[in-house]
Image (cartoon, rainbow, N blue to C red):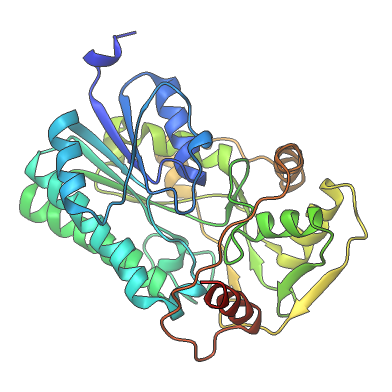
Length: 347
């Protein structure tokens, strides 16, 4: 294996977050690149990362910092995961959403073009599809329903434009409903399985918006990272978009029962909150990814949730500061309104 200084540098943004930390570990284990990890620690944790990397605390919205990283480290690959990935909340934080998820991405694309990097790997989302009939396929016309999905689609389109104008090589992944170790259990707005496990450990009922019949294909983190980590070196992946994740959809109620069983409290209570605006049934087709990267593994939901539950119990209850800078409060779910008011009261 080459010495670290002989290997090209890969910038991983959002590296201390959930998917980013797993991807960083996969890149380190693969040995092709030396990793420069960027994260503002707003939703991630430094201890999620392995020790043998260069860690920089900062945001992709800081254009000057992004430029320095490319210059100082000679970045050749970008794996861009940094985003505030809260679909439901994005309706109420539009400016914050577009600043972080679009402008931050543009800062990276600008530097990638200037430095003529080898490949830009972007983590998009199934949210770009909106309410179209599942399974979603890459050939379907996106119709996102929330600002988060709109932001992700905007970056996809900008990457395509940068390729046409400058020849920027890119790969796009649209993962969905990913869960597993290192997920932020304390985030009250996203990562439903983490919310369930944190509520169980606090002795509170598991909370579900609506009747729980909403369906998603919950995807174990270990099943999606290998394709993402290898993609710059797979010629057939260049310039392509890939759905990636689990094939079998389950209801949110089924997920709650599975979580309770994995946490050894099968009869843990569930509290149903008023429904919110969201796509009812969402899952995607992964045949394209299977053709290019191989079929890969798919851990059963029960086995994956048990793995996450063991990790969650070992780490204990997590808490994160609720989002305080809500820009539009109209139609904000009541449970989120209470969180916002609590932040404002103690500010």
